[in-house]
Structure formats: C-alpha cells, structure tokens
Image (cartoon, rainbow over all chains, first blue to last red; front, side):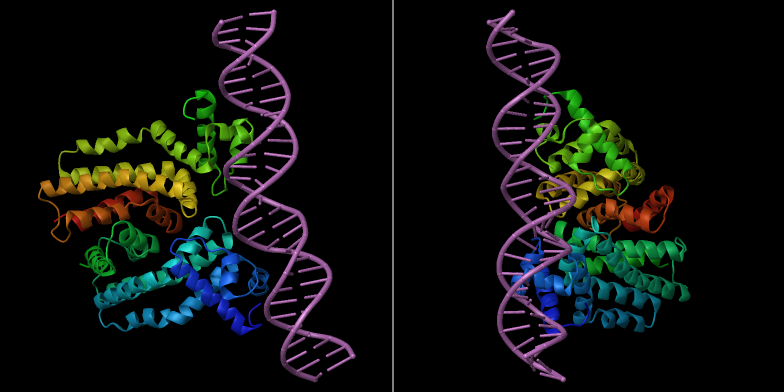
Length: 194
Length: 194
DNA sequence: ATGTCAATTGACACGGTGTCAAGTGAATTG
DNA sequence: CAATTCACTTGACACCGTGTCAATTGACAT
C-alpha cells in the first residue's frame, strides 16, 4: 500500500491537500478527490484503504512539504528559555494556518472515526513535546513562574495553542494572524514567567 | 411542531439527554432515541423535523432543567469585578461537565450540519456575553489590566473557557474538576487584572 | 506469448437520515 | 351514535457517502 506508483499516490495526496485548503468548509468526499486527481474513485481505494487512511497520509505529506520539523526545531536553538517560548509560539502559531484545512477535516472525522482520532492525537502529542520542552527550558533558566508545576504549565500552554483556539480567535473573533501570535506570546509570558 | 403532545415530546427530550449523557462516546442515532423513548422512529419525526432540530431542542430543555440561567446570573450579584470574574468562571466551569455529553454531540454535528453549527454558535454567544460582562465589571472597577483592550480580554476569556478546552484539560490532561476551576480562576486573574 | 500491474467500469451492500402512504385506536364533537 | 381528528404505528423506499467485488483493458517486462 505504500509505494506502488509514487506518481499517482503523491498526485492524490497533493489534490487532497488542495481540496482541503481551498474548498473552504466544503466537505471533501472521496469522489471529489478522485475526480480532481483525474482517476476513478475506486483507484483511490487501491492506494488508501479508507478515507481516514488517506487523510492521515495527507498530514504526513503536508509536514514533509512544509518542512514542519525544521521550523519547529528552530525554536530549540533559542538561547534563553524566554526566547525559546516565544520562538515556539511563533513557529507553531504560524504553522497552524497552513495546516488548518487538513486539521479541520481530520478533527471532523475524529468525532466518529477512531483511526482519525488516534492519528490526530498522535500529532498533537508531538506538538505537546514542544510545549514541554519550552516550559522545561524556562525552568532550567529559573524563569518558570512558581504558580504552576511544569506539568500544569505544559498542559495549559498546550491547550492554549490548540488549533481550535486559533480557529476561534481568528475566525470567530476576527483576530489577524499577527494579533494572534502577538497576543499568545504575551499571554504565555504572563502566565508562565516570573 | 412545538406543542402537540407535551408528554411524548418531553419524554423524547429526556431520553435524548440520558442517552447523550450516559452513552459515553457512543453515537446516538434517531433509532436509538426512539427505541429508548418507547416510540417508533417515525414518531420522532412527528415532533422534530431533523436530528439537528432535536439536538437543539434538547439543549434548551437541558438549560431549563439545570437552571443554567439562574446559576450564571448569580455571578452578576458579585460586588467587586474581581469576585464577579471568579464567580462566573466557577458557575460556567461547573456547568460544563453537566452539558458535556450534549455539547459533544452537537459539536460533532457542527462540522457537517449547518443548523447544528448555528445553534451551538448561538449558545456560545450567550456564554460570551457573560465573559464580556465580567470583563466590563473589571474595567469599571479600574482593575482591568492595561495589557488588553476589553474586546481582546473578552475574546481571550471566552476562548479560554471553551468546552473543548475543558475537555482537553480534564479528559486528556487528567485534571480534576477542582483543578480545572481553580487553575482557570488564577489564570484569568493573572491575565486580566492588574 | 505470458504475466504482472495500475487503473477502469459497473454493480452492489451497508448504515443512517429523512419521506411517504396507509392504517389503527382512542378521545372529541356533531 | 357516527364522524372526525389526532398521535402514533408499520413498512417500504429514496438518498448519500463509504467501502467491496468482479471482470476488463492496456502498457510494459521477460
């Protein structure tokens, strides 16, 4: 299932991505993807056993394309814990809009599909590690506010940075991306540093 | 559609509520509700045109039963803005677990069903007003931190108090209800007061 | 020539929502 | 008492989207 015809496979992933990004809010069906990719609906199932599989594969493809690892890793190079916190929020916060279409589709599936939920939880776990690392950096700098244990602080930061929260603030409250990143940076500083 | 046979109607609402609360995570179908309520599936459609309609009606029924208005209104009686903020977080935060089953079902529908999304947005708008009122109270007390405009503060508080965030903190991070309420109170104070 | 492999066409099953038509039984009203 | 109305029943069915199955095609390799 992994490496039959790479061309078609990546073409599918690419068009899935396009449809999810552009087609704002529109539900993307297997048939839509097939049509757009110029293949039959059934050919989709030759490459991906289920819709959940396809979406999950698309998240990995997305990361690969956008180089998310590198971008998030950059925050590790910050010298002080404080800078690191900022850098992480900046990196992740800027990444969200690029994955939002995807995220929304998977999140929607998660409520019904176990596999999708699992996949998303896994990716959020990865993100969580970044939060923990940032909080740890604060603590080794002696900058972590005494108000929170590292665990609590990580939980809170992780929750604060959720895609749902980004969605609510930018889509519903009308915040600009800059406002979002800026506000979350100061919020995090206020909450977690002395 | 509103007041044919009140008995049957409320019996439907009641069992819908039960199924959503108890049946943890289980998907509740129209057929399930009908069966549990002791009527035919079609009779459901005699009272509620669509599943979304039923769920929406159930939220109102829920509020009615739990007396959410009264509980949230209590926070208005607080003397200082600070107390009011605390009281509001306490009231809403304690209300969430009682509506969580419902909320989850509606949230899940919202991703596909326009009506459900609209209904939920409406209810969150109501909750938002409570946030705004609390922030306003802070400001008239001269206690609102200069870091945020009232609008920003309301947006942030509103987002902070979302059901999704409660879900993440209590279900995924394992916070107890007391931890949640306590932590959010201090967080809000830290963010919004001088 | 034979086999393999990606892809095609077309049909179909399943689950869940919503619709339609005809019928039943009990209470309401002339 | 008969007629009507009303809540509800049974059963069939259409629609949609996902996923499956079987038979076929056309290209490329050995």
